[in-house]
Amino acid sequence: MTREELAQGQCVPLSGAGHRLDAARLDALLALLPGWARDGEAIARSFDFTGYEATLAFANAVARIAQEQDHHPDITFGYSRCRVAYSTHSVGGISLNDLICAAKIEALPRP
Image (cartoon, rainbow, N blue to C red; front, side):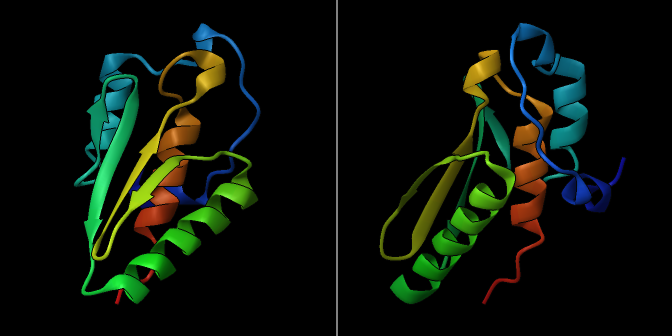
């Protein structure tokens, strides 16, 4: 699978631990997404920007992806930095949905 193929994926409702990614599959998919890393039972990445407007525009673009996919990350941001963390609470860990959304974020244009 390529990062582009992952970004073309669509999130689906998941429930139960059977949908959690095992370590080998997670590592293989994270290798497609430089900068993203496991953070406990989530994947996360921080993004740096030149100022508040660019940071806010990015956070809003991430929010649009979240709404389109019905899969919502934890987003924290300040003047020039935005941190995005994904976890699938209904499976108790990291699922393919998290990686799909991360790939969609990577496909966003950046200033």
